[in-house]
Picture 1: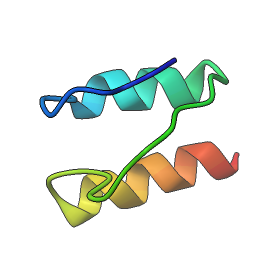
Picture 2: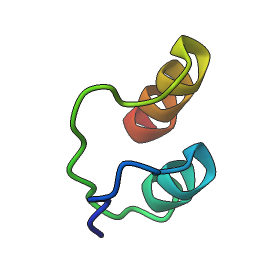
Picture 3: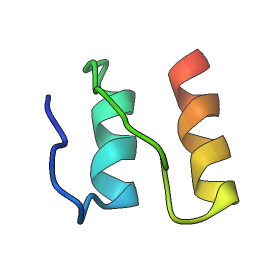
Picture 4: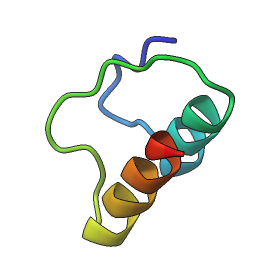
Length: 45
């Protein structure tokens, strides 16, 4: 899955990670620190 738009949404990134898809991510990962931490936590499961 490729997220190459400036208007990525937290829900689409989280969905991709939860379904096991690889997503290339550029900085910043999210708009809020809590969202970024949640994405990382789900990816590590």
